[in-house]
Image (cartoon, rainbow, N blue to C red; front, side, top):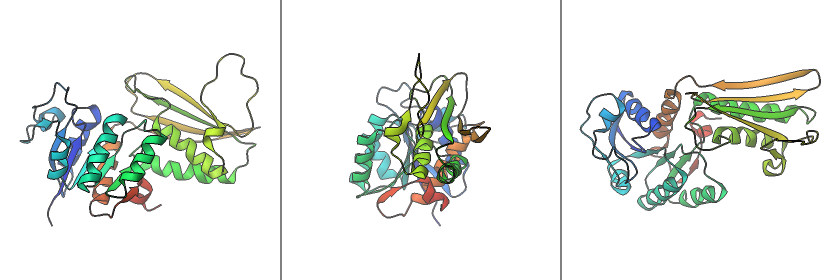
Amino acid sequence: MAELRIGISGCAGRMGRMLIAEVAATPGCKLSGGVDAPSSPDLGKDIGALAGIGAVGLTAGSDVAALLAASDVVIEFSIPEATLAHVALAAQARKPLVIGTTGIDEKGHAALVAAAKSAPLLWAPNMSLGVNWLLALVEQTAQRLGDDYDIEVLEMHHRHKIDAPSGTALALGKAAAAGRKIDLAAKSQRTRDGITGARKRGDIGFATLRGGDNAGEHRVLFAADGEMLELAHRATSRRVFARGAVAAAQFLAGQKPGLYSMKDVLGI
C-alpha cells in the first residue's frame, strides 16, 4: 500500500514543526511538502531542518495550490484569514484538508460548510484525542445535571496564544450548552469586572489565563451548593495535538466531501 502523502500548511510555526516531525515518524505516512506565509523568513529552508529532524529534501514554500496537488491530504494550522483562503483552494482542487486553526468565527464556519460540498474537510479546535473525549463527557454531564449546577469553563495557555477564550474552551462551552439544550451565545458570560451582580442561573462562564509555556489546560466546573464536579484535561506536550492531527489526516484521506470532526475520527 502506498504511503499517505501529507503536506503541512503553517510549517514554520510551533505546531507546524511538530507536525513535520510527527508525520515523518508515523508508519505509512510521508511528507509531501510544507508552506508558510509569503512573508515568512523561513521560506526556502528545509522543512526537516526547521523541525529539528534533519534535512528531508523538501523546502518551505508559499504555493498552497502546489502543495495540495502534491499531497493526498494537507494539515492546516495557521490564522483564520489564511485558513479560509486555503479552504477555498482545497475545495477547488477537491483535496482533503485537516484544519486545526482556532479563532474561526460563525462566518468562517459557514465558509467551511460551503467548501465541504466539494472537498472532505475536518475542522477541530483541538486535535487532542483526550480533549475530544472530554467534549463528549461535558455534554453528557450537562444533560444529566440540572441548572442548579453552575457551569464554568477555565482555560490556560502559553503567553504567545493570540485568541481568547481558546477554541477548545468555546467548544467545551458549546458542548455544555448542547447538553442543556440552550443557546451558548445567549447564556455565555465571557468577562467579569467590577460590580457585576449575582451570577445568573443557567449561564456558562469563561475564565482565561495566559502565561509561561503552558501547552493547554482546560477545566469544566459544575458547581452546586455543597459540591463541585470538575472535568479536566491537561496537555503536557504539543505532540498530543500533532498526533491527533495525523490520525485525522489518515481518517480523512479517501472520505467523501463533507465537514467532519474528531468525533468521526473517534467514532463517538
